Length: 117
Image 1: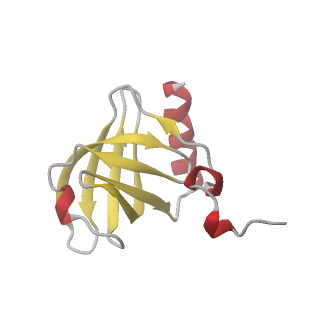
Image 2 (image 1 turned 30 degrees about the horizontal axis):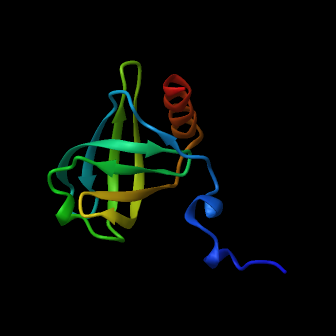
């Protein structure tokens, strides 16, 4: 008997493995529709498909469906991406799925993950 995908736990439905972030990565976030900065946060985890945002002071202003501009920086590289808020994990975290990633953005995220692990 096959289990429908909607009943599987989240970790079984993921397309890409999630890597928890323990080092210092900075995440600058902009609301793309308003062309306005939302602030600086931290990724709690990252994958090739998206990331979880934490420690963003304006977290309560972000809603599911918001399209965001992201600038992810570590000590060696900075990459810009677009994403969409897909869920609020807790009152102070939310999940972003990357959208329309170019090959160079994909390489940059792979590089960040590689440096983390």
